[in-house]
Structures are given as structure tokens and as C-alpha cells.
Image 1 (cartoon, rainbow, N blue to C red):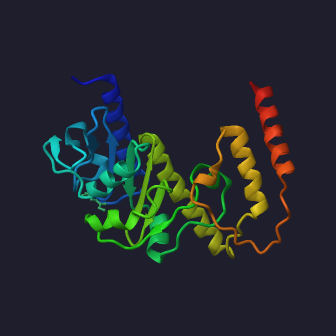
Image 2 (image 1 turned 90 degrees about the vertical axis):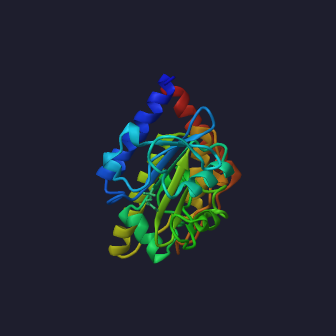
Length: 255
Ligand code: 13P
């Protein structure tokens, strides 16, 4: 029986296939997307199909062991990587793998996106580490992302692309958008004379705002690097407390 929940999941997956194609995050038959199903299996895009053309009947259901139990097409050749992420991250319910131009440029230049540059990225995503090169579609990819999978929610795959994952399909997809957008801006900044990172003082204030607004500290995410030549001022516990109080007060007034 097809439930409303399953119908919505399929709709989201197909819409994200169309978006990654329309945004140029993939070309030809690149990329793959999957989501955890309520029965513990996974719904995934098939191998070798342009994402702009994926229809509900093309999707495949596979078990955590990688066995296809529904669908007529063969599953994505990157399922081993997807299953590895689900196995290591019980909190993850969707995985998106693409080859967006700017972020894959960083991956090909083997430059991790780990500088403290954009407040939204620092608070919402953390640094994006670079996994060593691994032959696509082989178990090597899982081994390469192994050291990063638990701490990061987005990983650059050297000379290959990007993988992002999250609590649901949209969360995983928006992380892909965020990574590509940040890579694009960082590239432009580099062309304009070089990006300047935030200071550790700036990061401490962001941390205070993250705690006050979202009730969570982003220090659990991969830490970004402060490369700014500007000297840091001391950011005291008292200042931290003041920012938290100020944001909380503003939030309570706006509700
Ligand atoms: P699939 O078509 O098998 O999903 O592979 C595409 C891809 O991007 C490999 O990295």
C-alpha cells in the first residue's frame, strides 16, 4: 500500500532530481540521491539516468545490505557510499551526491572548504572537509569518507564531487546548494584579491548567537580555520553571556 508519507518522499526525491539537473549540479547521468524508507530500506535513483528524466517508476528500493527488492532498473553505482553513510549516521535520512562546478573545482584542486568565511555556513554546516581520491563507484569511496562521516554533513570527494546528507531529503539537498554557493563566492573572492576569514572573536559571537537562537552550539561541527592576520581581541564569558541574553530578549519580544 502506498502511504501519503511515501508519496511525499517520492515527490521530494523527484523534485530534487529536477533541481540538481536544472541548477547544473550534475551533467549527463551524473549524481545520485537516496532516502531512508519507513520500513528500514532505502529508495534510490537508478544508475545511468539523467536526473532531469527520473520518474517514480525508475526509482529502486534496496535493503541496508544493498539488495534490490523493488524497481526494474539497477541501483546507483554509488549505493555503497550511501549505505555507508546511513550505517554510520542513524540521524541521517537522505543522501545527495552531485558534481557541482565550483565545489568540485575545490575538490579537484584538493582544497578543503575549511576557512571561517560565511556566518551561515559556519552556523548551519561547519567546515567541509576533503576526502582523499577514491575510484568512483567502488568501496574505496566509503573508506575515503570514513574519517569524516561522523563529524561532517558535507564532504568534498577529491577529483570527483560532493556528498551531503541530512535529516531529510530537503535538508540534504539544501546543504548541497549551500556548499556550491559558498564555493562559488569563495572562488570570486579569490579572484578579487583573496578571501579574508573571520576572526576567532567573530566565531565566538556567532557561537553565542547559535546557542541563543537555535539552542545549539555549533562546536560539534567540523571547526573552520581562522586565517585572518588581524589580531584577536579577548572574547570573555561575560560578553558571550551578554550576547545570548540580548538575542533571547529580542526573540521573546518578537513572538
Ligand atoms: P550512477 O549513475 O551509478 O548513480 O553514478 C553517477 C555518479 O555520479 C558516480 O559518481
